[in-house]
Length: 286
Image 1 (cartoon, rainbow, N blue to C red):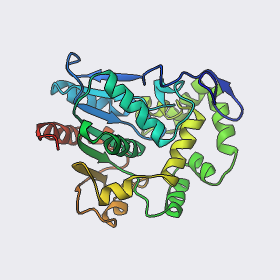
Image 2 (image 1 turned 135 degrees about the vertical axis):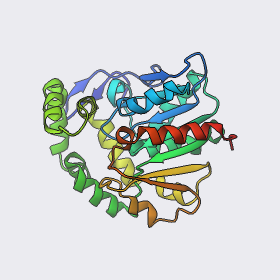
Image 3 (image 1 turned 90 degrees about the horizontal axis):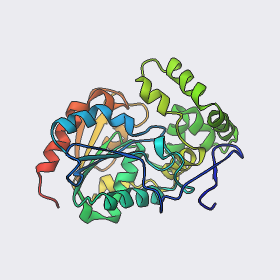
Image 4 (image 1 turned 90 degrees about the vertical axis):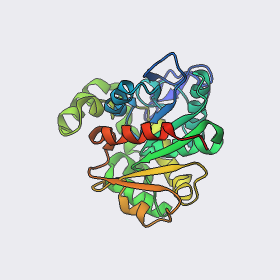
């Protein structure tokens, strides 16, 4: 599909911009006259807003940081017509090069962990350390389908090959404002900004992110044999990416930290995550 035309849902056309021409939407925090030293990558059905509490702490610590919206999500919703894992990695690397990043601590959350690993694998000289928060590590494609389908109704229809999710996404594209208001009302325990952003994505971006976790998830092999210094942060009550998935997998080559909480550790444990990043910045690269 050429840049300029995109599919928002079931046969719903919308304008798209090429990621080769337009950079990912992003926020730069900390001293903006310095090259970013921290990169924060959000997860599925989210945006850079998930990093707002952590971003404030990094800003206070004068840690130059970069928080992009991934292809097809948040303010980058109209960027891109291909949304495979490699496409996300390419777009992130293009942004890092554009802002002059030379050595970064990369923190990913959920699906953002897969993108983070892709960045480190393709450009190891650029990544000082990796911190993977609530990584979706599945033992097999079947386990991934079961887990994704159980916890997310739209993902369930994607893994089952149903058109229901595409049709629902088309409706949300037309009625995005009311849909965001409805989600905010339903998900009362989720911060309102986060709830609104959960519907601010394109259908292909969401679909391809789910498919990439089924077909090309790099996280299991990375956690067993990382090629960059890696810390894995798990939540004790995470039903989307249970701690046991990592703990039962070979993980002797990574540092593992368990924190109380659910899948939203960037919101509930920003202090701990900030300390991990600040400590990682002190380490010599590689």
